[in-house]
Amino acid sequence: MSSSIIDKASSVRPGEELPIEALRQWLDANIGGLEGDMHITQYSGGASNWTYCLQFDNRSVILRRPPKGTKAKGAHDMGREYRLQKSLAPVYDKVPTMLGYTDDESVMGAEFYVMEKLDGIIPRKHFPRGLEISAEQANKLCEVALDELIKLHNVDYKGAGLDHIGKGEGYTERQISGWINRYNKAKTWNVPSGKKVMHWLEAHLPEKETICITHNDYRFDNLVLAADDPTKIIGVLDWELATLGDPLMDLGNTLAYWVQADDDFMAKNTQRQPTDIPGMMTRQEVINYYCAKQGLEPRDFDFYEVYGLFRLAAIVQQIYYRYHHKQTRNPAYKNMWVFVHYLLYRCKKIMKRR
Image (cartoon, rainbow, N blue to C red; front, side, top):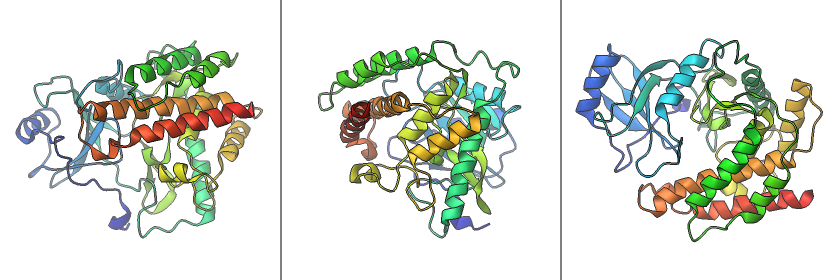
């Protein structure tokens, strides 16, 4: 295993430091067995919750906490994310082991949880230097990733006692109204109203929905790959948005992040995963593969694609809202308003197809 391709955290961003003494006391009291001094680094990939690596002499663990500033209702719920993964672990083997959680904000001013650290490759915008992926491996990774999503969608959530994690029926309509509301609340002067897209989604709600466990942020940079086999998934991360929902809407969310080789300059400028390299599937091939595996006829996916892109626009705008109102100083968020324009433009292009 080459350590150079293992995903690593970097320096903690200014203003996002953790209280070392209070945190160490909590860790010793609630997890224990952590030897030596604590060295803290931070992952840059997440644009929502803050994720840190806590390194000790004998092991490393991961800490997740919400960001500072105004949060959308129901967002950044660390307790829910912790409990969901703990409940899901017996029936879905790609969930990291949960180690501890607290809602005692006296420790660091926010709730947080700690979980095991999975050492492996995380495919961000590019695969790490030193790792060459053939077209055959890229295609196999697509298949393995989609198979893992299909496995999640086929978990017997009632049998596993997970029917409490979401409302279920009526999910599609709730998602459309909910993301419209979140976008409107987070709107700043420099982004479009989005009304045309909102009205289109409301007018094209599918008549049928299926309910299953959905991840709702399933993309390559939330997968951990084995360092000795980059086509093998050893973990699925970031379960903040997981619920009981419609699997095709979950796939629509995945497609919103899927940049393919013939996409335009703006898409490639904002990509977060290496889905444009030789061998990777196109978005249509993703749809065809998923439907074939699930025994579905490939349906008109316009609604699900527009939904995924609009939802992503709302998420990006919520993040930009915090930067705009000086609730975070992360410079990566400075120009996110431009991306909101682009996502809504993509929505309208798909709407014109219909």
